[in-house]
Amino acid sequence: MTSPDNDIMTTLPDAVEETPQWNVALRMFGLALLVAIGAFFALLFAPVIETVLLAFVFAFIFHAVVRLAVRRYHRLQYGVTTVTLYLAVAILFLMAIVSFGSDLLENGKSVIESVQGAASAINSGSPVSGISDDITDALQSAGIPDAAQVTTSILQSIVSRLSWGLSSLVGFVGMVGIALIFAFMLQMAIYSRKQGALSWVPPSYVREVTVMMSKLDNTWAGYLIAGVAFASVLALLSLIQYELMGVPYALVLAILTGFLTLIPSIGGLLASVVVFFACLTLGSTVITGIDNAAFALLVLLINVPITQGTYYFVGLPLTGRGVHLPIAIVFIGSLAGLSTGSLLIAWLTVPMIATMRIFSSYLLAKVSGRTAFPGEEIPVGAENGFLSRMFSPSPDTDVEGIPEHTPQTIEQPAG
Image 1 (cartoon, rainbow, N blue to C red):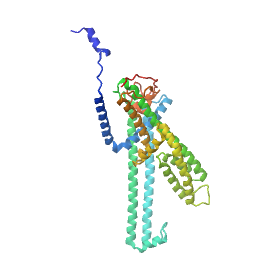
Image 2: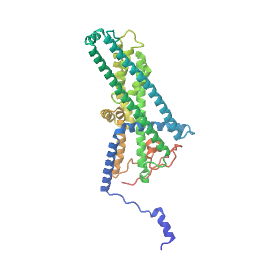
Image 3: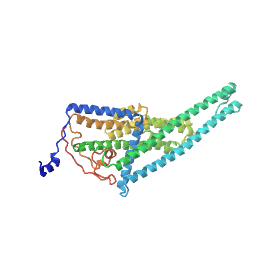
Image 4: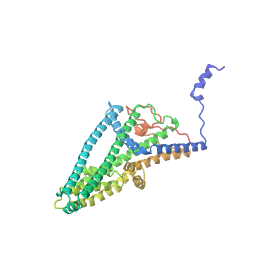
């Protein structure tokens, strides 16, 4: 018969037996199993990877905005501020869709009516605006049935192109809408949860996992900040050029140039082409007595070196510093992302490479039986980053208050 004292002793934490550790063979099997599970989920989510990545970027940025607002205005709460922000974004998004959609339909109707009017004029023998007399005579000499057939072919081509563009636009708008909804769910998950997704991590690994999440937060924040800085510099340089040369709508085109150049490698060229056609159509507001084509070519010859030079000598170094990768890796990674045919993937390839580098260094350290990130302490406020809050191993604070952690180091057992 056991005594009460013995019963008490069996309930004390010191009497709990230590869980046996896996041997090397089982560790390797577990690693292979994790890789297989990761590959399965990669294939499963491949069709919606762009939506997931866009949602992650939205949530990452909006989390930073909400954090800033809550820390500056202490009466605000994280949940209420998040809902307010997303409602404002949703309203602006819907207003943009309605405005742009009405303009698109109006312009589409105008184009089709113009083609139909031209077809009627050709068939009746009347002069057609914008078409030379020689072309008109050739169409008339071909006979009404042939002219009608040509007209029908033109209309079908226009309708098919409009349909393709409209379907692409609708698909993009749908992706953005779904991404915003998913991003909102991610942020509200941060607000409502009581324990992190990795709460099963043993206490002895809290430091390593928290440091890794902090590094990932800093990597993505550094990439986005570098992009904003690069786009701002290029927009300013382009604005100076456009104002001096009299490019129409200089401010709008300068902002568009800075935005498009966020697309790796080809973004600057795309922006230069857009500016070229604007100058070709409208001409210069400052330089007089010059042909529109010559003016557009002159702007292009000056703008291309500016965009490309800024990308290679400002954009790449800033990005490399933001994600802690060599410039060569940033450059070749951008090209690799561009080869996928997705501009969103091309834009996010570099931070994804940096993410894999951090995660791989942690994984290699654990597989080889070493301590990951030796000597590094948990940074102050690390638990308030987006990834740190989403995947925090052992949260012990409420997100509304945005409290700060003091640096700490938890001893890590060897192996």
